[in-house]
Image (tube, rainbow, N blue to C red; front, side, top):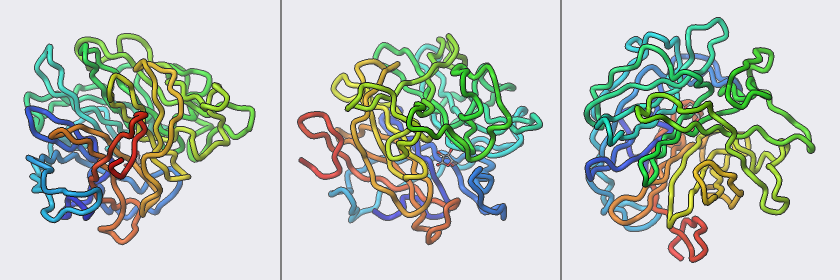
Length: 341
Ligand code: FUB
């Protein structure tokens, strides 16, 4: 599959169907000249664009598109300078519809203006899927780390999944799963590393009716190894959570998918509850060109799609990425597979 969007660099695509149309909320990568490091400082994004796609019917197999889908760029809908609490780095966003208030809510992580530049999660609210979005003046109270993904269940209860290691700062909150204690000595590419220490878990917060606040403090979303029934251990880098949380539901089962970071897989785990525990199930995607891998899964026009990114357009520059899409399938046991069973 060729890059979906070629006039700007895009990454971390969160895809949703709103009002019958497919909308993609990605990061907007730019070259700002910051040297690459394991803290992710080179990901120095300053605004968000929203894109829409009327149909994906031209895509006839998993990785070819005789007629590439027409993608509309709705322009920059939110900028760093519009958001009072943000200092820099508008990272991977998501969007959700609040049916009770009839508002679209853009969720985004960014560094705040504190001395250590903590990542927090903000919201911006608008009347349509493309905004205009007005940011709340403060981040979501009690929010921390990166990569928010909002999942609204069939009963309209909304959940916010989030977290990211190393540059995403999740390791700074060890021992305080609700984010109430921050350890600045753990900033940077650090995490627990012992065969007896569990990996750090992603977080989930139950949102209140406004979908702009947590109803209760965030908690660990526990990921279990199927062979032990115990939490995945910290040295299991091929399966431990790193970043890029996403939740979807298929046939009544909750699918939590994520990036394994330094092993570059998109992995998934399943549960019968949106709050877990989740049991590791397998990989959705093998490593792509570029260090990061980040995705979303969405049903559209009766088919299931994986939106993801790689670095084809920039010939492999890790911080200049491009969004792609391919069809995915489920086998008879509910496993995600890339080829039609
Ligand atoms: O785009 C910046 C960061 O890179 C995201 O927040 C991570 O998921 C990774 O894709």
